[in-house]
Image (tube, rainbow, N blue to C red; front, side, top):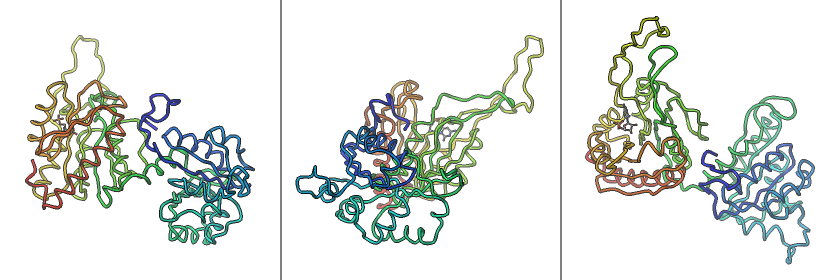
Length: 426
Ligand code: C5P
């Protein structure tokens, strides 16, 4: 989670604020990861009610989950704490979602047959299917995972209305290596947040540039800038959460790839230009957040430039880099797609400078922000400028802003597409 100023204060974006999650644990060694998931859900703003099977309680104690969730854990349908003695009804009616993590192969088989011989399976069967989604995170040995019965059960579970969150690949507790590990808690959290996000970009292909570029002077030195890539990565994540198929062309940054996003790493502006031009014609939306170097050394040395004892300094000549956004926007002007969004970091007169840049770049939407103070920070404020005027998105975590921006882009794309093409917009 990138936006945490202080881990103890929780996730600044509070992505799950107001959501009540019933977290169900069935038996498996992956139960140890569920403790971390429980904590992550709470940090993201959710309230969490834990329900465990008897088998799960062999792997991790209810006391641990009670301490982390701040609520007594339910393990039995005979729990006397419920005045009406109907824990399965009461717990499932309160939930915004039931998340089973881990879901063992045996527990999945139980769900499929509608069996209800313990509280967790009983609660899943009793949930109002239209209003309480069921998300499951399988965890099992690779042979169990690959077994035709298991694969058949996944399909049936989805046909019955559950969302199967996928599995990880790698070293397993049994000592074997393969598919079937439970996803990591931060991956599950990203998937749960995405699940709740309205799919305003469903069916859209979105291409995004992010980060700085690095222009080599020789094999060990180069020129770059202070862009952290955080805003572009947050937009990639928000676009994926909103249902888009996202490709992120990233300059050299040390940020984790958002889940479900295809990442293409590049170094120089020329490489970024090539990577973008090869993909732009298939994209419906292009968002250029990268801080692309305007110039590059005309002829980088192929060996390290050495001090030679004389006092002479190297003389660098520069050539201009391609303007990636302008190139995509120019193609879009004839083709009508992709819908292009530019960024501008300005130190002063944001409205005037960003408005002028929008016209110069010939893009329908330009997003201004004040730099360099926000570079590398987790917060930002944005100014959206289009043909109709401007809209301020005040200071907020970059992830919150990214989500708002994605909604704004989606509504503009919808109205552009409904009247024909993006050609005439700037
Ligand atoms: O011209 P300037 O760099 O201020 O414009 C910023 C916008 O143009 C950003 O969206 C940036 O990603 C994009 N840009 C680009 N290729 C360049 C320079 C800027 O795509 N060579």
